[in-house]
Image (cartoon, rainbow, N blue to C red; front, side, top):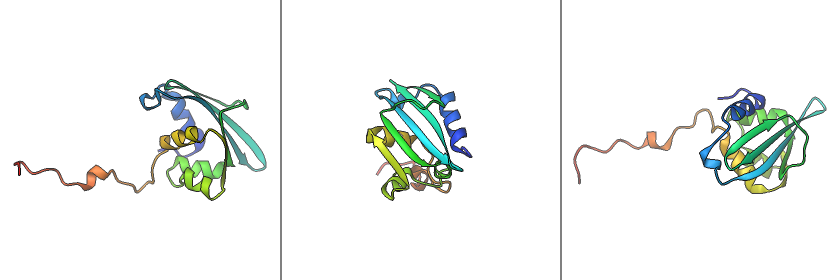
Length: 126
């Protein structure tokens, strides 16, 4: 799990193709505020191919928020949809790109895979 949004985006850039985004085309920009400064990240998704840069370019979806919030999301401690609905994160543009990006973030640290909660089937048929 990533410790910061920079680390998360670096890991995303190191994985340049994601099959689950194979039908996605679009750009996302993160405008993150920290100590009165705005840090920009630009993510381009083209048929599952991902590129990440530090450019301030136009994008189909733009997220404005506090860097600490995105750091917490990268650790699985904050949910981006909750942050958006409570107006701690401002979204412009294509909501579906935001939802796809959110699915790339980790879940809560204490979360368990639902399959782990189901006991394995017994050897015989019923």
